[in-house]
Image (cartoon, rainbow, N blue to C red; front, side):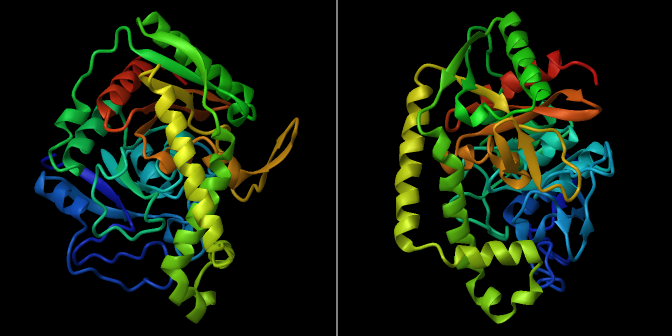
Length: 378
């Protein structure tokens, strides 16, 4: 990465460079050392040229930050870039850097990658160290790259994981791989244009010699509720002292989430972890029959800034919930997941998500490359 400019989401500690975590509370924090991932980027020769905006404390999916400004989609300034790594996705798509560092607790790399039109990779849980990254949900947090291409994301993965990812990002064979296209209630509410592009990506993989079939995963309908309880409890515990002492130092949306999290009972958290184990087991069983899973990264293209609900034939859904509905399951389970741009609707990018087995980033990236090669020009 000698001389390559890389942007860093402003929740990773950077030596002698202010790190605010998108907050008012930490607006003057200047770390004395780098986060492990930042140190690895520098050791590989990368130029850490700036910090990128994020949703306050990474707790949201809009990057509408009350202290540091509302981030806007590079394809349409009326629309959201997603979050919480919205600034990192914008920097990549705008050509300000070759790649960027993000974090992902419920989709915070893959959602902005999908809405802005770049590649975003959430690797297997624990593949990249989080020392020096400000946490949100200890059992859900992942670090990973955003990049212009799948190959670039693979190179960054190698560096961020400390050199062990040569096993992860190597070029795996793809002919004959088994691809499962997700079906079931969790993907019933998807914009038609998004569904068409996922089906087109599946057809393209079939033409390239992969074996494609439809799959359903039991208990997937419980992932959003399980993620919500888990994250609210963990984030609230982390912020307990600050939210009690200075609640007005938080933006309204994050303050509300943290206060609601303090109401999560220990029994509810334990029940959520039991359901989480069931979901993990169900996914493990599905991966006995497939090598990768294919589904939308987000069920909608970029919403308008401030838009609160999505209207479906069957009713309304909060935008925030819709955006993470198809990404959060893989934070719960820790599976590697990649968002790749594939087509567009009304000039707005659409992301296709490739999910693999634990520690099988090689196949995820290999299938992602094929999708990238087959993507229609927007």
